[in-house]
Image (cartoon, rainbow, N blue to C red; front, side, top):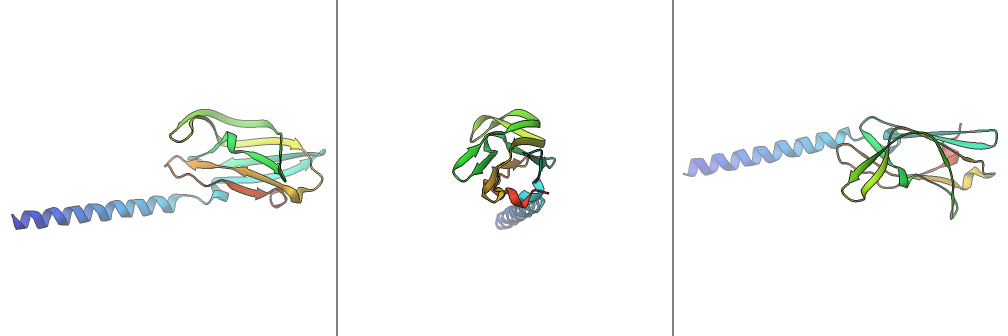
Length: 140
């Protein structure tokens, strides 16, 4: 009986250690937000273009994508995206974007005031907090 209890405890501890190792391995596979959702932009004919290259196994929430000029949200047009409906455990049915998102908005005179916001997740279940970037840092 004592040997059986000892063996059971040993198996339980081993199982916990293996699961913990898998958890750490998965965390190491999670990309930095800048790698999962690489952003770039440019200005052409007084229009501002912004592109997200969304890594395989990751997606953006469509409704999280915002361009802000101070307190004012700028409207934009989606030029290209791979959009689908996703049943999210927190948000319910929501639109997500995979692969690429390419948008256009009117040029603003002072790029230093512009911020883009976006949020996304990995297919493995890791969700990033809301990300923000200064437009002036991604324009080439």
